[in-house]
Image 1 (cartoon, rainbow, N blue to C red):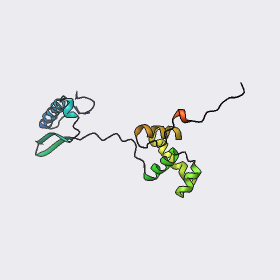
Image 2: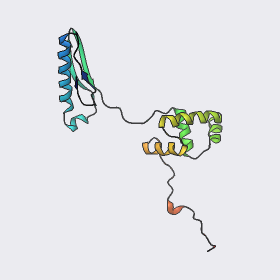
Image 3: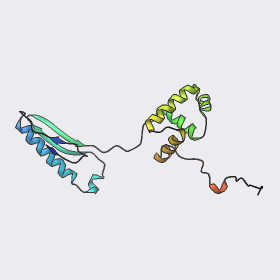
Image 4: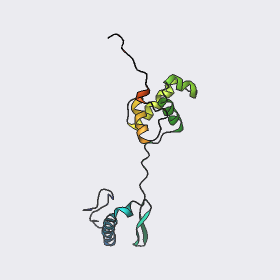
Length: 156
């Protein structure tokens, strides 16, 4: 068995009775993919489609196309989930969110459970922190520690 790097995940095994032309084509394909993977980093960063193989084997045309990697935008949230996330980030409790969106507080809880599952978190704070880090939501209220009210102990 011949393997290329983990990014291509291509393997060739003896055909065991298949057409020898197909075996040769697969071996050539593995060689070609290896040479393409050895390209410079600058070329591989172009993030565009790249036709690796355009060949006719046994009367059939085969195309091998390297597709650009999708942007890591994180999990897809529905418009309703995004609205709930925004309101949670603003500090609103479930009951207020339910009243504003004209849904039950049970539905808000269901949405939150689904959002937590998509993000792999288990609390509202972790959800907001992760979405802030991913850039999905943005902090609007930056609190400067120096501007916070302080408690002064006058007893001692």
